Length: 99
Image (tube, rainbow, N blue to C red; front, side):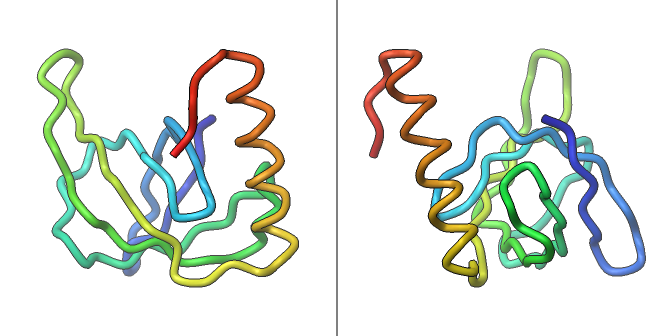
């Protein structure tokens, strides 16, 4: 799923690779430093407005870009429940184990 994130005055595109209660793994074309704050609006995850912090940013050799691991600043309870339910549904449908 593709989203827009705000980094300062810039709006950047990002693809959500996966999401959990803790944060999101994003694929982006921009190199970001650890600790960078990104403002997000992710209606598909029932998150009207939130902030993600970059934990790490690793280059992707094939296809270019970066895999950006992030953590949520704070989530509203309804967003946590929605993400947990969505994540649990994905695990049971693809046979993967969470953690």
